[in-house]
Image (tube, rainbow, N blue to C red; front, side):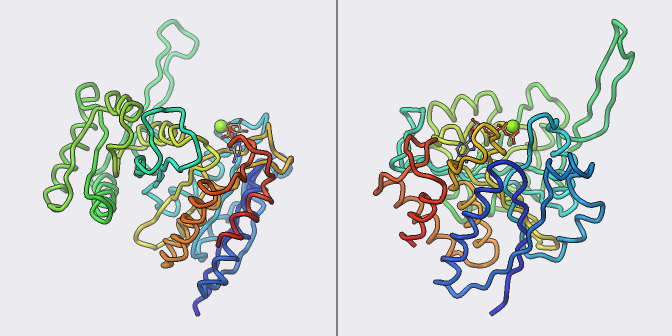
Length: 351
Ligand code: ATP
Ligand code: MG
């Protein structure tokens, strides 16, 4: 039995509560499915930054390069600017390990009310595929005439044929394995160089995937459709910025940010992929044992799938569905009084 080595980065705040919960679930499901997992824990975090001046050691990427996957909790700390955790940890890992696909599944579960009356349980089940390493989040640009009336900021978005093609292909393949529908989000009427290029590449790759019906929408119209008719989507592919916005919107539609999972994938498996809940460190509830662990647990299930154990992954997501639809066990964000530990134990019982 091949042992999978997992790098755990619990991070800050509730990250340090939900990652251990996810590991308890992983251990339970691994025992049942004959999967061997070994963990190495890294204290990379904003707390480390405050103590030592860096989120992670200078050779951090080398320390986890050989692992099979990374499970991250959340990074962020009151008083530490977001760009420190972003540029000190998340972006170096995503870019350094070519995790160019950011996958965010959205599901409205029975038993979790969505803020949208249009979002019926079972009906809303789609995936946002976000380009994760280029696009609008490029570093090229700068500020001119600082402090003068003419002060100007310029920032370039960089889209490459290779970068767009590979994420679009991934989305087409994902759609082919689901219900065969793909929606691409751009804004080609307003952004006249990069977005038409994206559209052209989608059309080019679409011709190679005849089994998938695809269309393209302007991001503004698409945002409205997410709210008015979320059940119509299956796989949605978008650039780095648009995908970021759409996936947060979609997580809100699902009823609680505490449930939403994410995967940062390196599909070629040249480097480890990273799995993390969508939520942040939630300093307002940290340390009180009341965080919803489902986002981290579902992310861990995506990790099992990536490691070649789709049955074990399915067992975890099925148990999440059963827990929510057949029991009253709930953490406070879902209107209950259960602690993180009680909620996790309830899920493990169902496994
Ligand atoms: P960060 O700076 O790390 O992004 P944040 O406070 O900006 O943290 P989140 O951590 O995502 O953003 O929190 C947003 C809100 O959602 C907070 O009120 C938080 O308590 C709540 N929340 C986030 N995750 C969970 C969770 N797993 N369980 C319960 N509540 C959560
Ligand atoms: Mg935040």
